[in-house]
Length: 508
Image 1: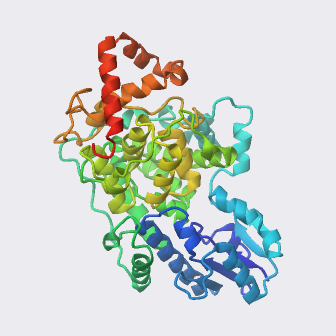
Image 2 (image 1 turned 45 degrees about the vertical axis):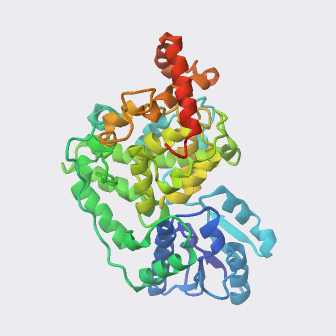
Image 3 (image 1 turned 180 degrees about the vertical axis):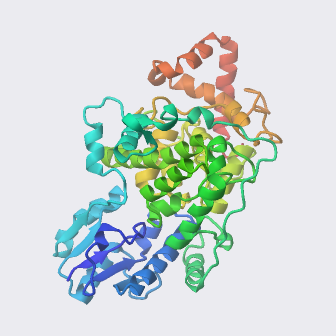
């Protein structure tokens, strides 16, 4: 008999580690403090995973599977995953362990040593819930000088026959409809009301446990809203396909104060925990276009996030680690300001994005990339600290998806492996794509002076202080030409104002 280990982000009945579970098998699931605290995870993230794990355990038991489930408050809990595996082997007499490859390098490295530590064979199976295996990604990237997501995405579209016409041509005549998906918010733009799931006794018990054991962590559990079963996640997906997807494309880059969700799907936490499967989601979105229920720009943009970005960042992570986590191409060293944990700042855009994060363990991708991430890059914040923050505060964050998106996309810390240029923008971008700037203490039209938007001086100062590494980038040539044409006195004023901003990050 072997022990079948299921981790907290592996809550799929199709999981490879469960493939040959029978009446004589034992499945191990464990809530352990070491996994809940290796970064200071958001309370809602911990509560979501613990509740989803407990519900998944109930589903397995209803199918006749024997489950050894260790709760966090079990007095015999070792609070360490390998020790709980060791204890389960001793209690059951298991002659080996079966598990599915995990999503983070630190844990994968530990599991790779378990055979020696535990004295029994440990079989690590591929995670075939992903559309592109790690081996397939390595084949794709071999001999490529540039690893652009767009070309990977097209290959995935062809391989899995997604939104294709005869001759492997994209429906609509083009692969990417990004140009149609950058509309600024119109006045009064509001997202639809989202589903609210009843909290059963299992979830209530978890909420009490998390509040008791993680009281110092970020977040408020009184507004807990997550789906915690596959059925509930399916209901949220169905609402998105039916009611929200048609407007997703137009407003996927828009930001509105007090509207954290707008027309975004909010299913990433469920995909990353295994409650939904990516290819199923893609087929459902694809069908919505074929049936005339959603426009192509919306459907293609949504599918690209899953079939393109999600699979691509996982491939980058597993082919670049472990050195990838240590990269700091722009040599950014400044400490993460406290406002990232409190949301207290006079910059309305930062207060809104961080406030949504604190409240919901969520903010949508443009807020993450072009507000909190953009500011971190412009200010030269330490990539390791920024990455740890992103990993801690979002319910959908696991290192395989968080690190490339933060280090590579938001911070340009990998030197261009993921992005062809830094995603740097001044306050003018935020003013165009949001309603944050109206009523803000700072003016997005000003670059220097007491009322100047901090993004503006930081933008030009970022380009100036990183010119040795960035000036030859052809996609930045226009901006560097503009900088060089500026009056030297104006350049100096910008540098001085940027220095002042950086010296007062805790109070701006």
